[in-house]
Amino acid sequence: MKKILSSIVVAGLLATSSFAADKKTENVKHNAVVKAEQNANVALIKEAVKALKYTQDAYIYLNDKKVSKAKDSLKKAIGELAIVLNAPNAPYLLPVNVDISATEYVGNIANIKKQVSLAKDALDKNQLPIARTILNNLKSEIDISTLNIPLATYPQAIQLAIKYLNQNKINEAKDIIAMAIHTLVTTDTIIPIPIVKANELVKAASAIAHKNKKQALKYLAEAKKQLELAQALGYTSTSDTTYKMLTDAISTIQSKLTHNKNTDSLFEQLKNKLKEFKDKAVSIISK
Image 1 (cartoon, rainbow, N blue to C red):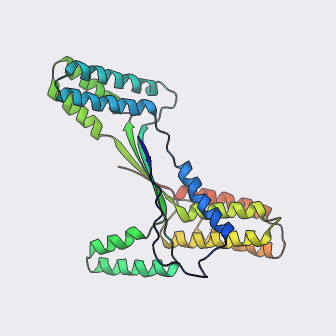
Image 2 (tube, one colour):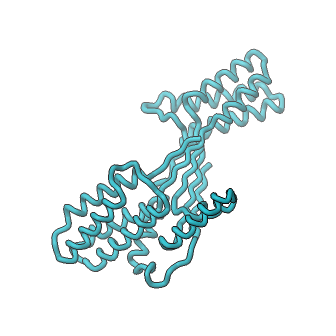
Image 3 (spheres, rainbow, N blue to C red):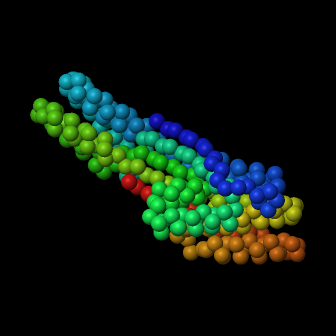
C-alpha cells in the first residue's frame, strides 16, 4: 500500500513587502516542492508486498486452526522473496509501504529566533510539552516514512515457521510469524524544503541569466533567503560546503550579473555545490 499526503502548514506571520516574491519566483519555489515530492516517491517491491500479505494471511489461518492453508501461504511468501533474493544487487531493505507528507514553514528569520527563544525558555522551566509544540512548528520539510522487509532475516523466519508447522508446533510457528512481522524496519527520510527551493532557484537563474538578468537576480535573491531560512531552522549538511560559502557564491554571481560580467562557470560551480549540499542535507533514520 502506498499513501501520499501533501499538506502545507503555514506557521508564523506572512510579512507584506519584505517577504513577498514575484509570481515567477513563487512558481519556481512551488514547482521545486512538487518535483521533490515526486522524486521522493519510493518504488514498492511488489514481491515483498505479496510476501508480507501471505505472511499476514498465514497468521490469520493459524488463528482459525487452518494449518494447511497457513503452510501454503508461507510457501507462497518464500516464493515471492526468492525472486528478489535471486535478483542481482538485491537491496537489504524491501519497501512495502510509504507515506509522504510535506510541511512548509512560512515566516521570517526574526519569528524563528523568537520561537526558538521561547522553546529554550520552556525547556529551562522543564515545560517539555510546550517546548515540543513550539519546535514541532519550526520545520519546513518533506517527510518520507517507508516500511521495509529486512531481506537478511525475514525469509529465514518464514522458513523456520514452516519447519515448526511440519513438526505440528503451531504455537511456535505463530510466535515466529508474529516476530517476523514485528521486525519490519521503518526508514524515515527528511528533505529540507528551503534547500530544495534554493537549488531550483539557482538553476532557474542560470537558465535565464543571459536573456533576463533582472529575473535571474530575483531568483538569486530568493535563493539566499531560502538558505538563510534553512539555516535558521537548523537543517545541517555533511557536505564540506557551508551556508556562508553558498551565500557568498550567490553574492559574487549577483555582483557580476549586475556589472554584465560572464557568470557561466560560477553558476556551474554553485549548482554543483548546492546539489551536493542538498543531497547530504537529507536525513535518513532507520528504526
